[in-house]
Length: 373
Image (cartoon, rainbow, N blue to C red; front, side, top):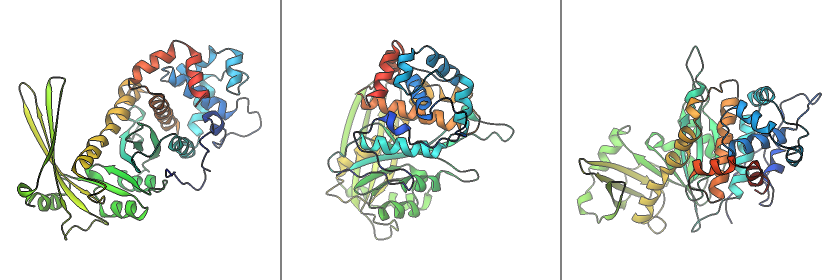
């Protein structure tokens, strides 16, 4: 049975639950008196519009205004909400609750592969939402399913805090039994390792220069005596060779449940340049479940969160150029982008820009994608 995210405030949706029905469970921050538009309908319009390429509240409002009365009725609306209505609502909406609902639903739409789920966790700053005079911008940490390419959860880093405790809070939302969590070097902390193993999961932590003592000790291990596993890929005018060597964990490693350490060498060769990067790894996954080839694949797969999520939000959706800055609105818009990327990945799209153009040509395509999920 696949594990599921567990939260205090969100009941787990059945796999048959439609997204439109689940949106009705998001708490409405408005006074019930005088509410003209259902919250679920406004969220559904926003998701559909972003599926069609909308990047702003103005674009969402304009897209909604072009829908027929029948199309609006299918979303539970009697009329199209205007830009100002959307902007005011999303500035007040409980972003945590919205992310929990959508993350729990997306978890039910993904599958365990070979008996385990592999999740990458990383943060991204919504730079376009930077405010004055302090110049701060929301920093959001997301959990990303390696295999399915969908976002399973998201949290905002609290003011006067940093990404490290936020990652632990995000992981606490999930049942991590038999789940592999991949993290970058920032999160190579004993407390994080303990939190993951304590929840029944396994970690793959990267060791770089920000932990110099640990890196120096790992570098000093007799790697020349350890067999190597290499894979070479060519394309786009370059050749990339990844070589991994794996050893049993030394006694002096203090990370909870640590089972293996590894040296990973990445050599990139082009016509003019050759670069070599060496990193070290610590994992709680044992040799039978994480042989060298599998461990290397997990590390390579971790960067899909950059290529398939953060890069897409920046380049395809223009997130860093967005001028949405009020209240919770920047985070809500980021959640809408996450949701659309996830829906399109589940529908089999690899090229998100092409998928947006496809859905933009006919509003029924976007509505069908939403209503049949």
